[in-house]
Image (cartoon, rainbow, N blue to C red; front, side, top):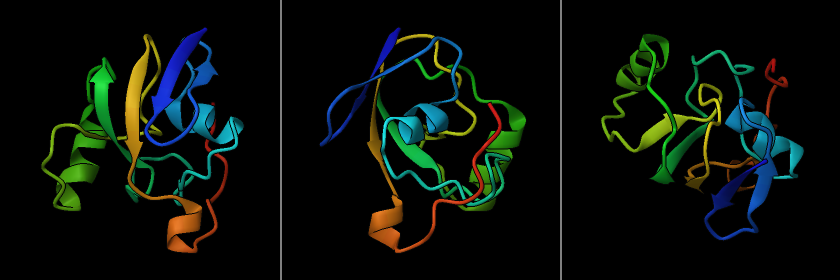
Length: 107
């Protein structure tokens, strides 16, 4: 099991290879994912504070560019497969925005 440190919250455990968005949601964290984990809406974006979030694929990079997000530490949690411990800061949550989380992303 890997450890995901979420700023301002308790650390959570996740299986290697799990999508970060699902690890967060399955641990009771109200992360947004309005497009169902398809790298289109960027509502599931997190700031990676420490650890290796893996390489960014073009689909994710294009979605971030299209929204004007240029900070290389900002990643889409729906596109991160966990392969080591990471520390993240949530950017948006259902509670902070008043939005429903969205359709559950596919594993």
